[in-house]
Length: 94
View 1 (cartoon, rainbow, N blue to C red):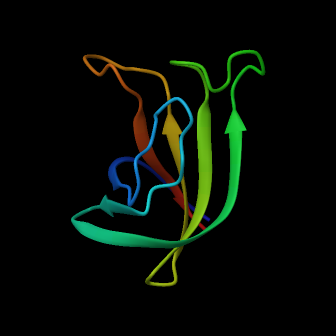
View 2: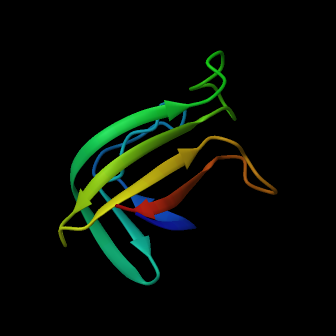
View 3: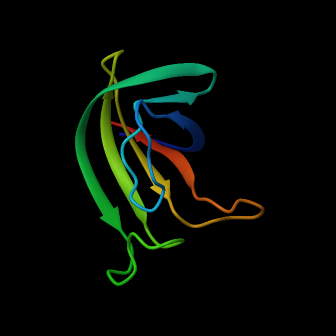
């Protein structure tokens, strides 16, 4: 596994609601577009009391892309700075 830890932009084929994160259908990292072909795993982090609530916890996804690569990414619900929403982070390659 290789740590990445970079903010990414994501796209969805269907609507989504940030409180209950779903895996994106695609993401962009370092100028390259990746299409998600399979979600291999999904899990949550948080304090166990407010996970899924606004500003609390992370939802992680292990995905396989159309290039055959596997990545773990997460949606961090915590707003930061001027953002009112959370952010998507490409955590690591697997």
